[in-house]
Length: 184
Image (cartoon, rainbow, N blue to C red; front, top):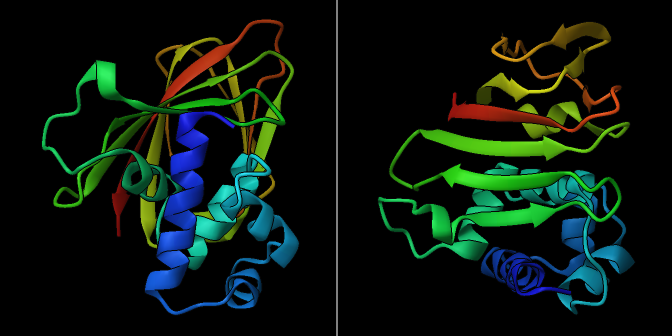
């Protein structure tokens, strides 16, 4: 496990302890197996994007919020050299936290999704946030609540009410997109 993964494991344990929750409590609230959470906290396993989203939602955080708490000290400026970057071990999805500050309602995230890969996130991951996706390179296929939309470079998409959403790259080239989110 790399240093980001180790910080993330410590942060999950800290968030759980701060709430006075046992592993079983977090497992029940997140829908993630108690054994899986234990392995993550002991730095024996790297969590997938879907697992992190579920854990973050249980803490009433976005994935960005959880990653930021693990990585930053709360400065107002987010330097490119200090960006928190995380790679999903299952898909190769790379998420770079471009901007996040506890006192600001907007978060910016840059994502690179490899060719032929997809990530499906549950509706719960969109509770209390609004988000827009802007494609920079490649073609991104979104399936939000069963409705499909293909986005080309320069296209932007504003999400509706929380729904299960798949981010898919059905092409032979990587896709890069920016996600802007605001707490609602």
